[in-house]
Image 1 (cartoon, rainbow over the protein chains, first blue to last red):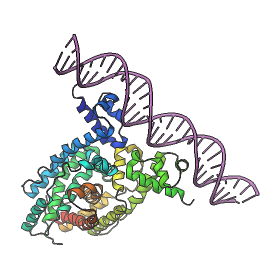
Image 2: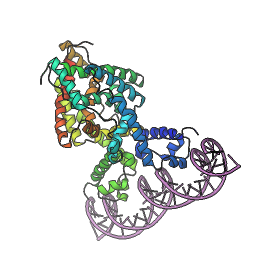
Image 3: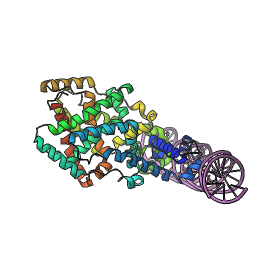
Image 4: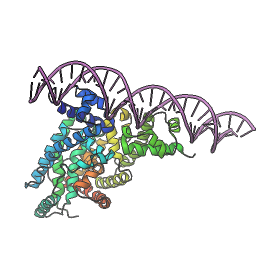
Length: 202
Length: 202
DNA sequence: ATTTAATTTAACTATACGGTTAAATAATAA
DNA sequence: TTATTATTTAACCGTATAGTTAAATTAAAT
C-alpha cells in the first residue's frame, strides 16, 4: 500500500508522544498504522530504531520552525511578538510535544542526547548584543540574554506542559483554553517588554 | 528492621521519579530499599498501590509548602519574592519532581487524577483583589490573576524541567547552574514587578 | 516462654512484550 | 512472464516483569 513508512512513523509518533518510550507498545503502533507487527519490524528493525527515527524527525520538524528568525535582524519587540505567536501556534497543533521531549531527555538522556543539537542553534552573543543596544537606547539596566531566553521560553511553553494543573488551579474550562492562549500572545511580550523598558537600574 | 516502610517509600520515590511509572522496576525498588520483592509486596500489595502512596505523599509534601503563604495578607512584592525564593529552594532539593508529576499526569491521568486536589488550594479571587489594589495604587492597567500565576510558575519551574536544553542552548555549565538559579530569584520578581508597575494601559 | 509479626529464601506462575521465523500471498517492476 | 518487493498470517522464542506461595528464620511483643 501507499506510504506505509509514513503511516508507521505517524502512528509511532502518536503512541510515543502519548505514552512515552516505556509505555508505548509496538503492537499498538502496528494497529494504528494498520499493518502487522512483522511488517513493522520489516521497516524498522527495533523499537529503539523506530523511536530514534520519530524523535529525530520530530526535532527536525519543530526546532528550525521556531528559532529560524531569532537570529534575523529585526527589531527586538517584533522578534518577541513573532516568536511567541508562532511558537504558541505550533505547539497548539502539537500540545503534547514539549512534555514528551523534555521527559524523554529526563528518563533516558543516553537515548536522545545525540540529536539534541538539532534545531538548537541560537546565536546568544548576537541576541545579547541586540539586547544591549535596546537597553542603551532606553537607558535601562542591562538584560542577561540567558534570563531573557529562559523567561520567554518558560512563559510560552509551560502552560502547555502544565495544562491540567493550570486548568484546575485557575479554573480555566476547556472552552476557554483557546482564549487563554490568545491572551498569552499579548501578555508574554508585554511582560518581557515592560521588564526591559522600565527605568530601574537594580 | 527499623522503618522498613519508610525505606520502601523513599526507594520507590527515587525510582519512580527517575524512570516514571512504566520505566520503574519493583525489583530495583526492593534492592534500593535493601529488602526483597516478597516483602515489598507484603507492604504494598501492587505497583499501582505503591505508586499511589508515593504520589500522594509527594504531593502532600510539596503542595502546601509552597502555597501556604500565597493566601496570607502580606504585600504583593514580598509575596512574590518569598514565593520564588522558597519554591526554587524546594525544587533545588527535588529537581526532578516537577517533570515527574507533570509527566505522570500526562501519560496516565486516570491513575493520578484523584489526588490532584491535594495542595491545589489557591484563592484566586483574593489574589486578584490584591492585584487590583496594587494596580490601582500604581494607576496601571489591571493584571489578570491567571496570567500572573502562570507567569510566576512558568519562570520558576520551567528552568528545572528544561535544564538539559537550557544548559546546552545557553551554554550554562553545571558549575554555574547554582549561580544561575540564584540570579533567577532576583530576575523573576523583577520581571513580574516591572510588568505590573509600568504605566502602560494596553 | 509463647505467640505474633517481620523478613528471608527461593522457587514458581502468568503474562506481556519485543522480536523472529517461515511460508503464503499480493503487488510491483524488470 | 519472471523476478523482486511488500504484506499477511500465525505460530513461536526468549526474556523481563509483576505478583504469588509456602516454608523457614528472625525479631518483637505479650
